[in-house]
Length: 221
Image 1 (tube, rainbow, N blue to C red):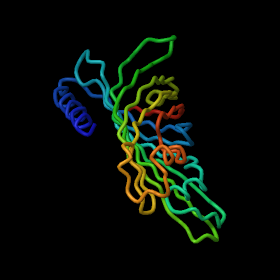
Image 2 (tube, rainbow, N blue to C red; image 1 turned 30 degrees about the horizontal axis):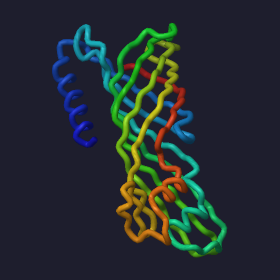
Image 3 (cartoon, rainbow, N blue to C red; image 1 turned 180 degrees about the vertical axis):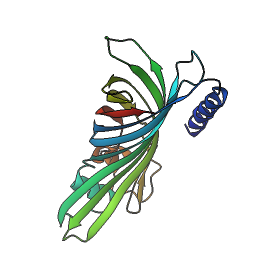
Image 4 (spheres, rainbow, N blue to C red; image 1 turned 90 degrees about the vertical axis):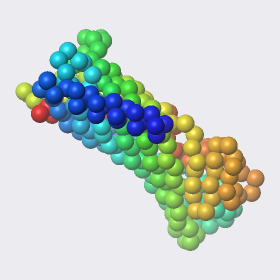
């Protein structure tokens, strides 16, 4: 997946370099809404690489807050069988995307674009057991892919209202917490009791299939 991302980025750079005969368009968009949790996205795009060439490329970052999982199960699977302490938890994801966008004419939507690209997700679940002397994080990083459709309604000369819907997919990856690692192939490190990867995977809400519905503003330079 890393090689695929490098290849896509290289193609994007080549396209920018070959499009000097056209006046390239740049846009910046900020969106908020749902992406497996409450999410906010900031992204920049470049289009009009060459005359008659419809492809756009976008690079962006997303921050999502979400329920990180079942606190008591996480404690048993990653630390021990103790049940003392009042659990408190919080979770977040930093995500990055590199998309290719193609103009489409579907359902009469204005300025509609189909997007497809590579994703990078960095998940953190923070679990605190007040009175139980435990405070640790479960983390995982994953490469994935995403697709969807977005439309932009002009509201001023350079400003538009953007609505974006799609879905991202992330394959199973290693979950790390405390001094314990659970891997999809069950080549685990310091696993507790007889727990396996499926137990950790079911207890933690790391991204897998992640639907997205966001709305916001797009500004064209």
